[in-house]
Image (cartoon, rainbow, N blue to C red):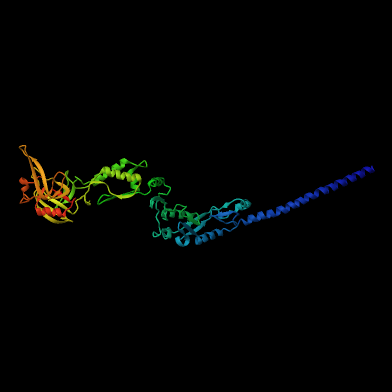
Length: 487
């Protein structure tokens, strides 16, 4: 019995000791937890109280941070922006600054949302905004004077017409004997409408600077150095480089340079015979005067048209020889000052199409008069006898002195109505042939009178008869090739 009581006491003692041993750690843990939580709660509730009056962390408005600031800071920021705001314009040739408040009457204000700048309900979850953005949804109000805005733009140095360089397209330029592509020059001409648009957008978006070229505010050259058409032409030019052919057409000069040469004479990058032939044909049509009508002012002051199938004077192109000469130059890519090949050649070429010049002989068949001019001045006027009317009519046209002889015999024959042939052999002191068929100017020793109507019944065989003195004067003062107009 005694042993039993003793054992029980021992067991109770052991249990009590175990209880005290297990209870001590729990108390210690509780103290630690309280130590941690109390400061956190204090910080949290302190934050709740703080953010009832200032903005939450990571709060932004109009691109600026207002974290931990009072609402008045927004008004202050708006005022500062109004007073200090400027936009730097980065231009091609430098930069300019527009001071918005000073230059355009700029002002900036802010309107709070309906529930005010501070949303107190959010202050209870302020820790969230340590890691999240809090963008205020207030409204920014920007105002400026439109008239002053336009005036400020007009006053920019970049808008001064004296300094504006308009864009220039890339082009081909001859440099010595070769062609080169000259790159485009975009210049510095601003597109005003685009600048106004970009500047207004920059004001609205709080831009600090605007790079005008990147924003498309400048005009640009339309044709650039990498233009396919320009480079295709360059390759063609490069094939022959610079070539210049000058054709002296007497009184007119045709200049053919690389661009014209390529256009007129090349086909499939080769000189085209057909196109050269066509060019020569066009020359003939434009510049030939031989047997063609051209204007002439006669001794009575009237302008008449002269020139017939009988002509021996004027420009007559040798098409075949001219083609060969030009085609050879083109094939060899040579530059040369030359002239076409003429079968017959006049002395001058006037702007009105005449080729007669101011030194010439003139014969009026109706009045049987001859005039001679030197440099536009009449040096001889004399009566003549021309071919017998309706039998040996003197041909009309524009002739030239083809041959000159003194003391010669003019021979010919005529078939009479009875079938007999009458021959003649006339001695003359001065002979000047006008046609290859025997018509010319000469004295007529067998005649005692000239002019009037003699030619009607006693005319010549087609020549122009005159006195010894007149024929001598012509012979001594007018050379081979002198134009002679008979009308």
